[in-house]
Amino acid sequence: MVKQRVAVLGLGITGLASVNYLLKFGYQITVFDTRQTPPGEDKLPAQVSLIKGELCGNTLASFPLIISSPGIALSTPALQSAIQAGSEIIGDIELFARALKKAPYQHAKCVTITGSNGKSTVTSLLGEMAKQAGVKVAVGGNIGIPALELLSPDVDLYILELSSFQLETTHSLDANIATILNLSEDHLDRYDSYQHYIDTKHNIYQQAKSTLFNSEDALTFVRDKDKQSVSFGFSDATYHINVDAQNCSWLAKGECLLLSVDELKISGKHNWLNALACLALGEAVGLNIKPMLATLKTYVGLEHRCEFVADWRGVRWINDSKATNIGATQAALHGLSQTIIGDVHLILGGEGKGADFNELTPFLSDVKGKTYCFGADAIKINKVVPQAQMVEDLVVAVNLLSQEAKKGDLVILSPACASLDMYPNFMARGDHFKKLVLALSDK
Image 1 (spheres, rainbow, N blue to C red):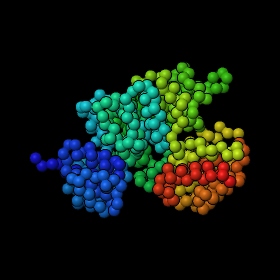
Image 2: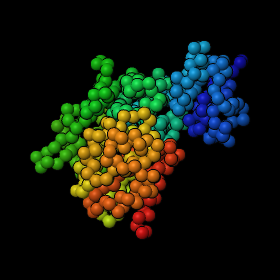
Image 3: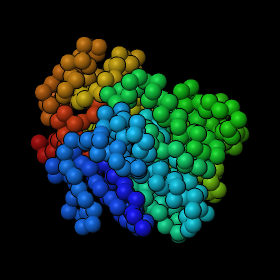
């Protein structure tokens, strides 16, 4: 019998996961990668061919099935040629979705999470809640482990973070519940319009039995009125914030007070919403409320996401390098500015990905201190945010703020931009910031 030919576009951890999964079913696999030294090449099984260089439409068109990396847009000419020739193009999440419908995996429940910001926090927090509840859970997708490597007959609950890029090539997920946490301009260097980005995110709702939306963000509202839905938000939501007679804020469901926000380890009002989303998602898949609340009392959050770095001479330094779009910076400023007695100082900059920096202006009223910007789009930021003083790099910004911030103030790196102009990724940028801040104590 002739083996079916499959093309895998892009190596790396996701590409390798796809290759290893497909080999179990006897496919003849060819990997294509535009890089001359693709990551994971040394781990590629010997029977798999690897072709390097520019993608060729005629070559790809000869493959009936193509597994494409999320980083490659469907609008790429070579992929368009393959689509017109009749090739099916899917991603690793679609392979996962198809596997989940068959033995020995079909018994498991699945939660899918997307949004412009907060999705990694919600995904990891919900995973910790499930572990605390004694559920055999697997967490991954766009965060951590590729979805195909999570597949196991022993898993009872899958929790997947999904990006818009992954949703472009995913069509048959049947999640128990899906959520769009929030939406703001992002990846406009990939999509031809903001609406295109929004529509791509909404694909997640079409592939779920029930949905969870954010009552504070109309862009997340479920379009299918017949779809079973619950909501979270500060008010007018199933899961909401309740302020009692003593003016204390509580996580609540209906009239039931669940947990005082003062008991949360993660800071900022945006994390109140993340906590509510987790409670809603967890209850939807049968997690007991007690272990979920216990987890909220201990969960400290993810690195590079409103991460506390140091209190130096009474100034709090926060690493929010994961804020790679304007919406993330808005959320951080809104969430943290009300937790301090002094001024907020902000560090912006990097690659804006085509975003409109004018959207930052209303939220900069929370920044009473200094604002510095650096990187590829510093000039663009300075044009619309005149108070943002341009500096050469992060070193200069930290040095200046170490002299200017006073006791009771907060300094936050929340760039509203990608990092690739100066760093390999947002983690490297955040690590550099933390190193600079921690070095202040040595001066």
